[in-house]
Image 1: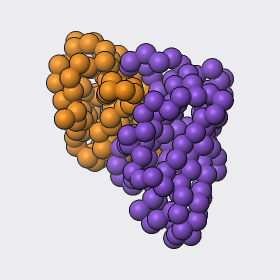
Image 2 (image 1 turned 135 degrees about the vertical axis):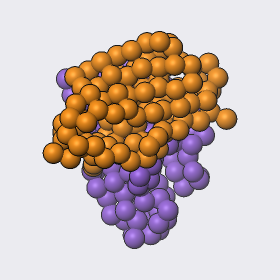
Image 3 (image 1 turned 30 degrees about the horizontal axis):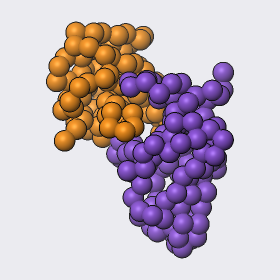
Image 4 (image 1 turned 120 degrees about the vertical axis):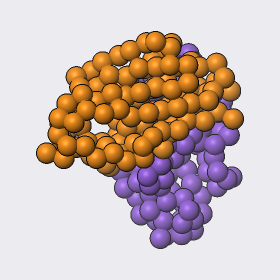
Length: 115
Length: 111
């Protein structure tokens, strides 16, 4: 079946621009996660949704970052007034249930470059 | 503090030369340890989940093992297509089932 998809795959933004990154999770998956991956590092948690509810946003680096999942399926990560330090790969993952230790399946990521 | 540390950071092997990657963790109440493979420009691809000390799982040339403090990913007679970054992660259950990742081991298999 179809995996997690993300769009766009690449985004170049000028400093100060707003960007929106989209994630389509695996159909029927309850949990959705956003991670940020810097070059040469492991992914770092940003935020978590259970259906449409955002249960944890402790990893969002600033109030310029905002995520939503209004219908419990597709999610959008929005970054306002982008800064150069926002340049990274943004990964979306989904898991079937809300249980601890459930396998998370990742999308291909969106590579964001802020100039 | 919950931490995951992987070693070595990078490893170069000749085709057929077996070795092991290490993942050590400090987390209260382990609820599984995950291994992922990541190719350049792609998202992490799930390999294994281990839930309890002594558990082992195998897939082709890869075998993952788990103790109370660390996990090993053993690679037997690797091929060039096994070249990738291997990531381990543990779930942290504090409001969210987020994964805490190590920094990864970049594995290169030379033909």
